Image (tube, rainbow, N blue to C red; front, top):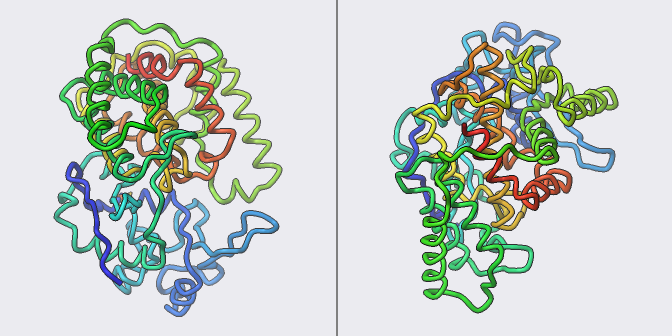
Length: 423
Ligand code: SF4
């Protein structure tokens, strides 16, 4: 089989800095072959695995779904193979190639882009958010090897994402929309202004008909509306109106979905777990009193305290948000196969909502440390939390989440929320 042609991000650096965050947060699903390999590696108490500790568990999501396998976890939720030094025991004994493929892929993500595979990164890794390490383009050989392993049995003939529910241009044209969105965010303006422009641009796209506009005419048209929104979008420095109450309710419920850290123990707790989730959702819908303690270290904060201005974005946040959004767009991680098969326009609105969500989470972290101004660490931590689910949690592709995004869009609240929480 011919090698996959990879499209690598030029904006991003990354090396693993062994913070062990991914080994504590992610469930690792493995194949039957990986299960057999791990079980034959002879793990004993001498290697730090207690005799009664299972290595692999059967994972079943529903009565009629097929069972799969995942690595077991220690009582604190960390991977069973994470050692006291925060390192992987499989890696230490047998080198990287012996680890499950899911661990070797992280934090990379491979998505179809016409005849190519585009490489994105998961911002649940703090080193990705902070852009730490070797330029990704210089790691092409290793990434190619992992991509070839990961995608060897997958269909390479993937249809382009739809533009809207009614329009489905071919790959060359849909890539023009992706490129135009990326360019909207590539300017040197402040990030909030760029995002507001992109949202106005996507609104114009959603209101236009493209069935007869293709190829070079499309290029011209997209440039035209980019120029129009650049001239029309108010600067983000203007005082924003408060989002309407109904939008604030929907938005808080959306934030709660991003903030929820579902451990397998919670998921498997059945009715008790669901009841806990329902109570939390009710508190977020009400938005009064103290925010339920969903995040480690974020306790005793009043909902109301998160609605006052927090001194704007920290200086470094502009670069971080610009890179985050551009990597998501360039790697198509907001629509089509890489994002629950959602059309491009809806997917971008969904992606845009992660901006006020991150800022809400960042405010929550700052307020729980009695600070009234956001620091870059608040933003970095909030991105790692929000990105953990975006494009990965099955709930985000379901009708409930999509309806919430649609309601906020129909209320015209997405831009208001972006402006309100950027202050
Ligand atoms: S979260 Fe990132 S830096 Fe931390 S261990 Fe995982 S890959 Fe390495």
